[in-house]
Image (cartoon, rainbow, N blue to C red):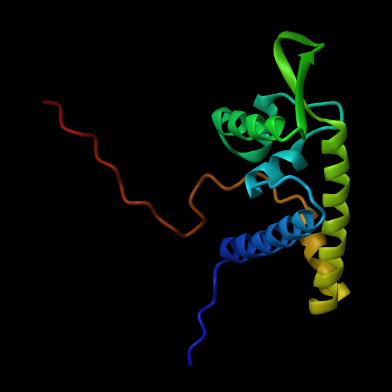
Length: 160
């Protein structure tokens, strides 16, 4: 049997799904209104005093429309509210309601339990090393080809 080495983004995605599925199951068992993984990500990206839709979209790496849809659903569930932004008459801040703060606290505790379970499975040193590697500054993603890799020359398109 030949083993195939999976790429790092795939492994990171699987790890993220492991945490999301565990957290969603924990929240469901505690009676928190059903939420989706993107809604959980939005919830985690919020500042305590509120965050604009544009900033949430930037932090999550999604469009404003995607954030608006998630916010609308979470407002409907009673977990978020929109308030005027004191620094801008044109913008609104998204923040957790009292029920949303309570759900956020339960989610935080669920994540702590999941991290503990992971430490039981792969070891505390491995979890600490993983955390350290992910918290280390990676810098901006490379935009130029790596040394030694040549791109094919691009010839100008002929004019009609």
